[in-house]
Image (cartoon, rainbow, N blue to C red; front, side, top):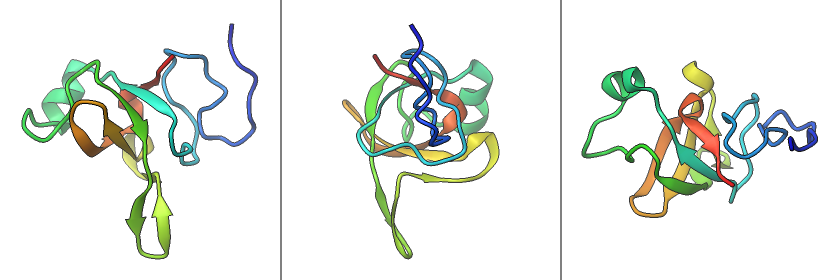
Length: 101
């Protein structure tokens, strides 16, 4: 069953397992799964400094000039900052994330 839209534009209206959509930064603590396409892995991610497909993590806020943010707008939906359960913190494209259950 799909959840009702929160109206924030941050992807919270999507049901678990759905791609993270929207234009606003997701909230701190939102659980996500890294689910890139093979072409995205080849083009944007390296083995040493990137999470592996299927890793689960939580959105975190990082310090930026003027405060803290969970994302940076840009191509492919922008970067979302995630603390992975088994990896550390990294920024990944919104298009490569799905909501965790």
